[in-house]
Length: 159
Image 1 (cartoon, helix red, strand yellow):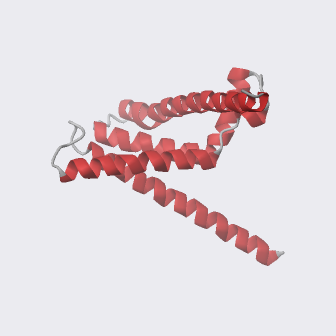
Image 2: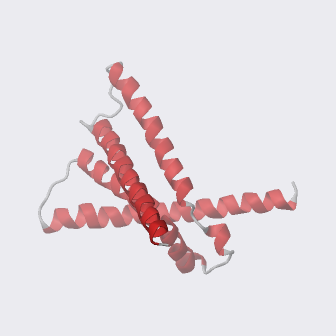
C-alpha cells in the first residue's frame, strides 16, 4: 500500500478510537445524570424501556450537538495531542449519518418483527422506545437545522 493509503487508514482508526471513547463517556454521563442520580435522589423508578429511550435520545442529541467539542476535550485529556487535531476530530455529519442509519435499520427490523408477530425484545415496549427516540431525535435535528437557517437568513438581511 502507498503511504497516502496508510495515512488515510491511520486517520480512520484514530477517529474511531476517539469516537468510541467519546461515545462511552457520553453514555456514562447521560446514565449518571439522567437515570442514576434522579432515581436515587427522588426515588424515581425508570422502566428499562424508559431508560433506553432517555439514554439513546440524550446520546444522539449530545453527540450531534457537542460531539466535536467533546472529541477535542477527550483528545486533549487522554491522547495529549499525539496526532494532529484534524486526524482526531469527530465529524458531526458522520455522526448524524451513523445515527440515522442505525435508527433506519432498527425501524425496519422492528416493523418486520411486529408484522410477523415475533417480538425482537422480551421487555415490553422496547422497540417502541427506540422508535420514539428516533422520532425525538429527528424532531430535534429539524428544529436545530431550521433555527440555524433562520439565523443565517436574518444575518444576510442585516448585511
